[in-house]
Image (tube, rainbow, N blue to C red):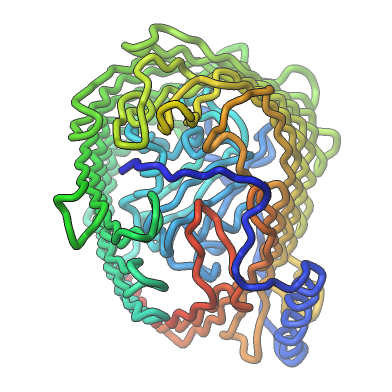
Length: 634
């Protein structure tokens, strides 16, 4: 549901509780970290690598299968070890630890959240599952309603910067690709959790090979009374994944469903009413990988996504104001790649049909078709270039093309410089086009947003250290926002301005295997900075500029007393343009005992008051205890 709030920012929004100054908060976090680090002097824990340079970047940075050293873009990988050790229990919270990625939650545990990359809006981020688009055409507020349990994720690849050359619409600020896992092992996993605010949940997953096929099923449930009035929630996820291998080829199937119901206190307006919302998302994907030797040369995919959204302005009085929205997206894609004298080429096409039925937006549909081409090869010794473009036809706007290139030069075996350029676009959502409420009016005459991004970076990949530094500039045109009119006191969707966003980010990942007797498993430090200039405008706008200006994330994992006892720390500093800055400290203590794994998560350890989205205060200190059991057969 999309019922917007009225935000007239005049300076920063201040929290009610007085906060210590930033220096004190930093010292507070460092001192606590030192305190918990002391036991590592007494124990040992073998180190683990943080990077696997030869692992394929499946589809996110290119339509061609590449290894990490071959990628000439800024790509962040959250692998299975990182996911398992992070002090989180859902995908949304995990993405909070990725520099350059901005998660703005309303509530907790991923009930409602917006995601953006490098200061782009939440509408300008493309979300994929196994390379298939799952972004919602009604509104970007639904893009993280994903029918995938964290337990079933193999890794997450985050492409920072435009991706329209590869994926077409909505890959404006970046792409998040969630890659699910399967296994040839017989395995059963059970996990139960309890926590603050009467939180309890359970997860069951099982996988087994049958002949040449592999199957995995997952079921989960989670409930809580909420951390303040009218923030209670229930969440259910079910998924099934199957893979069949035959004659060197591979067929796959994925089905998932999630059902979220939650109290939406202040999510869409004043807290005077007891707002409530329920979303139900179903996703089906089936595909085929045709191989020649060890390479995939053709990959057809068919997919369907349905999202149902039910909103009540007052859950005690449903007749007062009620919204029903249902979107359906049917799509088919074909990806191919082949070798030639020029190097490796990729080509493909897609078709999709989007529709919505709504009591507030009406009934609408539109078709989208597109083609893409990419050519990659060595330009000269130590230099590699990738050129490509996509062209998409919308039934509303006709054909538009979006070119780009990536250039990389291997200075030494460990050092690489890269340069990238690309054009991008975003089609308006159905909410922006057609929404109508007592305080909002959509605009069916909206034009697509357009932009271009330059990016330059350097990577260093050593035996135990990886460092990446990136500078970028993005120019955006025909930017869509909601504009407030004094004449009728309505927010109206319009193409109103141009934006210029400049920023840089740096990331360090280190596996210090010979330091502290091998007790420290991994250490990471990431920092991102953004600044945006808006073309002069007399309008009062809602979403145009409210990104993170400074974002720093420190991570540490080490052995703790016993070889099977580890602790992970995540310390975040965030300074948002229209809110106070804050430090957040999260930690996980994990104990592996035979087939059992017990974890204790403490989030917001120092009970900081802060905001991420609108006027919704985020929760204070929370504890979560999880007990898991895993059985692995032959």
